[in-house]
Each structure stands twice: as structure tokens, then as C-alpha cells.
Length: 248
Image 1 (tube, one colour):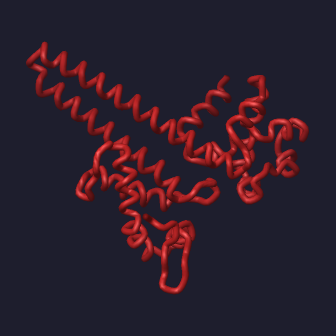
Image 2 (cartoon, one colour):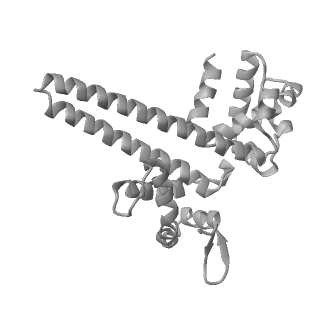
Image 3 (tube, helix red, strand yellow):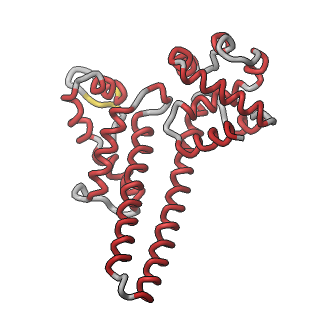
């Protein structure tokens, strides 16, 4: 079982501390970190491919590149661990790769059998349906992964989905105003740091930057926090929800 601590000779260092050192220029730690977490990468890739993954597989190489990408992009401000963040990145990159390969395979079949009209028509339909079904299933899985990750993140702020349902603004204009407030918070690094450090909304500082009253901010506090967490993280599907609120 992988430890969440990356060991040095003299002391224990957390994984996130190691990543920070790499980001600050200590590239000597990078290869060792990737080597130590190859089993984690293989397991994550396997969960997408639904089969055992070997290090010689192309999908494993995609997973390695994605893990390296996660190391470069990770920030503790996201409110999640490096492993949680990298799991999302790895799954997305592998699925993108599989989709591209499946699409290319479909095009190849289409071209090579074009002279056989009846067979081509049947093959194209089958491949289009297979690709559509594959995309649908993986979109559903990614959406579930996002929800589970977000649910865990909410608990660190002493929030739950039931809180969001209960405290979500009832009117579209109020929801849009709360989303704009959350975006202003996230765009201000100082306020965002306060949110993640204190695990509460910096209402006093925030009210000076928005066109809504302190009372309104306090009433929508939980909803604003939730939206800020989504905007601060790599949540593709939930960000679509936010886009819908702004466009409504």
C-alpha cells in the first residue's frame, strides 16, 4: 500500500511538500516520485480501461504524462490532496485518448470498407452506437467521480449536499448574484487563501468588493462557499452548472 508520505533519509516529508519542492525547481525529486506512484497510476488507468494495465501499454504512458501534469498544476488552494487531483487528471487524459483512438478506428473502418456499401453502412452504425454508448458511460462515471470528490471537499468545510439544497437561493437572479460573488472571491488570491485556511467565508472583506449587502452574503454563505470551491477546482461538469446559472 502506498504511503501518503514520501521518505527522505533524514525526515519524513508529505507528498504535497515534495510536490511543492519540485514546483520550486528541485527536479531531482520528480523521477523518484513518479516511480514510487507507478502502482497508483496503473490502478487509476485500469479503472478507466476496465482491464489490467501493463507498463508497456500506451494507456499507462498517458497516465504517466497525466500524473506529471498533475504535479505541475497542483495547488493546495484546490482543497484536495495531490492524489485526488491527479486521479481526476489521469482519468480524463486516458478517456480523451481512448475516445480519439476509437474515433480514428471508426474512420479507418469507414474508409477501408467504403466499396462494400451494405457492410459499410452496418459497420458505421455499430461503431457510432458503440462510441456514443462508451462516451455516455464514461461521462456518467466522471460525473460521479466529481460529485464524490466534491462531497468530500464539502465535509472539510463542515458542509453537505443537504445544506446546499436547503440554502440554495430560490430565485434565478439571487443565484446569479451569489455565483458572481463567489467568482469575485476566487479571483482575489488573498480572499481565496482566507477561505481555504479558515474554512469559512471572509464576509467582512468580501462585502467591500461586491454590490450586495452583508445580510445577503450571510444568507447565501453556504451556497457561495460551494460555488467558490467548484470554481477553484478542476470540476468540468459542475462548472457547466455554474455556466448555466450565469446564462439563465
